[in-house]
Length: 149
Image 1 (cartoon, rainbow, N blue to C red):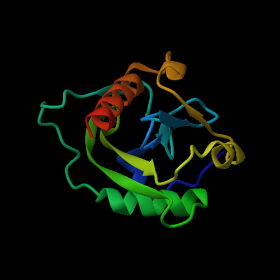
Image 2 (cartoon, one colour; image 1 turned 45 degrees about the horizontal axis):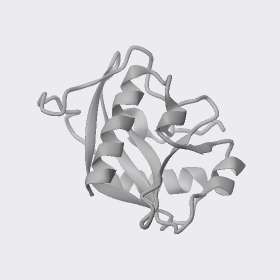
Image 3 (cartoon, helix red, strand yellow; image 1 turned 135 degrees about the horizontal axis):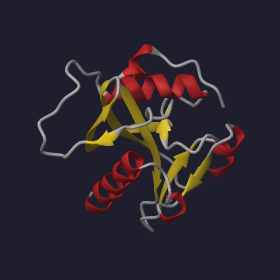
Image 4 (cartoon, helix red, strand yellow; image 1 turned 180 degrees about the vertical axis):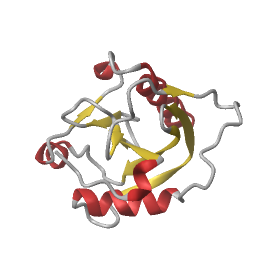
């Protein structure tokens, strides 16, 4: 899947995830290129900043704006994803700080078929082992946030 990336995403990314309300099954969307960041991967040599480092991306976009943009970009219904409160991570990249948020699928069942139709897969955290360190740290923090919520 090759996406024409809106300018909002120059300094922002989304992790797309599903969490079952009853089972707490947590699945992360993974693109065909392997990245879990949408709509595009983080640049090489990126590293997740400490949560209390105080680093920020400067002027930021509200997560709801990013969710609306990704819904349009991927051809989703307007209310398929929602921004997940409590998750905002900063990543140091060669081009500057990128802010990462969570967009959660508002579905009863995992969106396996939908994501397969977009050449993406829904994966558990253990299935994503081997991703670059920045992505693994973002996933770990996202999983922790979802289990606490």
